[in-house]
Image 1: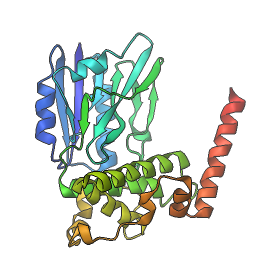
Image 2: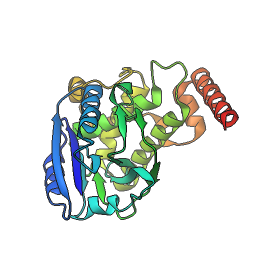
Image 3: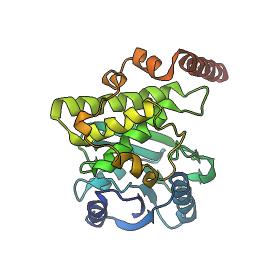
Image 4: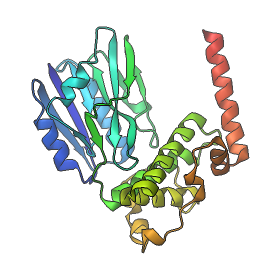
Length: 283
C-alpha cells in the first residue's frame, strides 16, 4: 500500500521523533511531506489541497501533526487494518500527554475522499466538507498507537490551552456551538486533573493559557500564528503562582454556563435544538 503522510510543523518539541517514527514504519510504502510555519488555516488548506492532488497516486492519505508520534513500527499498519470496503475515513484516538487521556485524533482517509479545502475556518481548521461514499469510523485506540504532546515545550503546552479555550469561548460567534464548547471545556478539565493528580507542569502551562482566554485577557476569535502569543507567555513570571480560573476545575454543564454566560449559552443551546429537530424531520 502507498501512503501519503503529511505533517504540519510550527515549532513542536516532538518533531524529530515524529519524523523518525514515520520512517520506522514497516510493511508500507510511505511518502512523508512536511508543511512548515504557515498560519493555521492556510496550513490546513494547503494540506487538504495536497490530499486532493495526490488521490490518484496513493491508497491512503494521513495527517500526522508534528506533536504526534507513532509508538511502534506497526502503528500505522494497525490503524489501516481498520479499513474495509465500506469505510473511507478512520479516526483513531491519540494518547495525550497534557491531559493523560485519550483524545481525537489521528485521521486517515482513503483515496476515495475529495476535500473541499477552502471550506474550513481559522478556529476549526480541521473541519471541512469532505465527499466520500463510505462511512467514517471513529474509535478509541487502547493500544496507544499514536502519542500526542508527550514532551511539549512550556510554550507549546501553553498554546494547547489557549487554542482549546478559544474553541470553548468562540468569541465572535453569538450562537456558540455548544457541543464543541462543552467538549473542549472537558479536555481542559482533564488537564486540570492531570495537573492536580500528577503535578504535570505541561498541564499547568496549558491551564494558564486557558485562563487568559476565559478571563478575556486573550480574546482573539481564532488562532492565527502561535508565535503571536510568545510575548504574552514570556510575561508570565511563575506559573506556580498564577491564579487559575476556578471554572476549569469542573466539567459540569453549569460551569460551561458560567464560562459562556447565560445568554450566549441559551442562544447556542437553542441553535443546537433547532438543528436536531431539522435533522429528525429530514429523516
